[in-house]
Amino acid sequence: MKLFKRSEPSPLKTNQPADFTDEDIDHCIERSKVLLNSIQTTFDFLKTFALDIEELYPDKFRNDIDQIADIFKKQNHPRHLELDFERQKDKISSFIDHQHRYLQDRETELRDIIALMSKAMANSNVENIEFYQRIYDQSDKMLEITHIDNIKKIRNTLQQQVELVRQTIKQKNEQEKSRIQYLAKQVSHLREELETAKNKSMTDGLTGIYNRQAFDDYLKDLIKHNTSMSGDFSLLLMDLDDFKLINDTYGHLIGDRVLIAFSHKCRSLIRSNDFIARYGGEEFAIILPDSNLQNANKKARLIVDTVSSTKYATSAEQTDDYLCITVSIGLSAYKKGDSPESLINRADKALYSAKKAGKNRSVVKK
Image 1: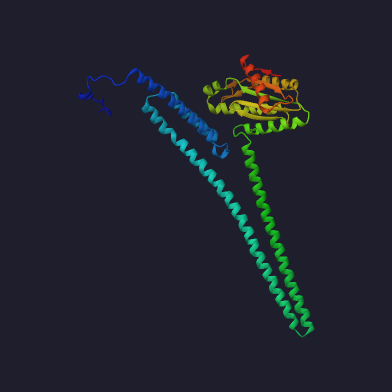
Image 2: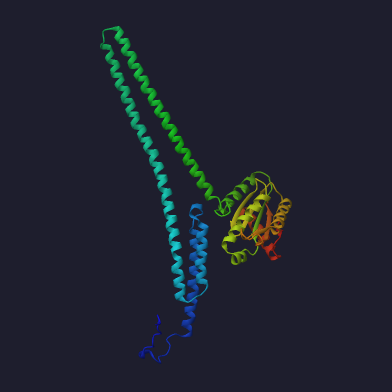
């Protein structure tokens, strides 16, 4: 028995002319293209929505988004498209819920710390009241000494009361010392969390080097510093050649490993005070402080030659399975009066020239 039967046409609709004109069909096709572009843009927004926090595995989420986006690019039958999307969409919902819970947990932790410190301060005030009340009670007892006739008893009683006051003050000092130590630990913990959060916000989640925001801030400060003090520095803009082909051939996981390996290779070729950042996608930037254009070009050629001669394994099991990559570099040096935009623009034009000239090379723009 067949699960599905072809429906017989209704007698009422037989031999009726089609209602759709060529113009209607063209309109539907254009509408479909707009919808597909809108869907792709929405997926790009979702990828941007993912925070670069290691615990959330944002790179896996972005890979999942790319896989879902590929479903719409295949132009399958609508029913197949619907089924494929239904199987994949839970990944988006799950990540959004996970990220939402993560942010709620961090907010709750900070609220608890603030509440704890507020409570400690409140208790401190209460204990101060108790302390002064105890001192006041001791003073009343000391006034009662004046009613004692025997001088020896006066002396003994006075000694006892003075000792009680001394112990009360000592106890208060110990409490204050303990509280100060406790609050100092809380402040230290908060500083560590703030420092960790700051580092995460300025670091690329995949490669571990600085991100675009950190690059923009560093370049802005460096230009501001060089406005008032003479000093050379150079900028290298680097772009991995044909990186899309690597992703298409080996997958995004291997593509991510290539980005990580490339950033590590560059870091090993520059000085400790040089600045390297992921500029975006497969683009990277290096700032070389106290380096003129000639020395910067030597460094750029070293990076080009080293990267092109390096073999990158694509599998831990198969050591003979590897790929090679190349990089194009555009570089320029800071000129007096430069803004971040003008310096980046020259380096970007040099990078474009390197790509146009055949890739796997460095080009200088003075």
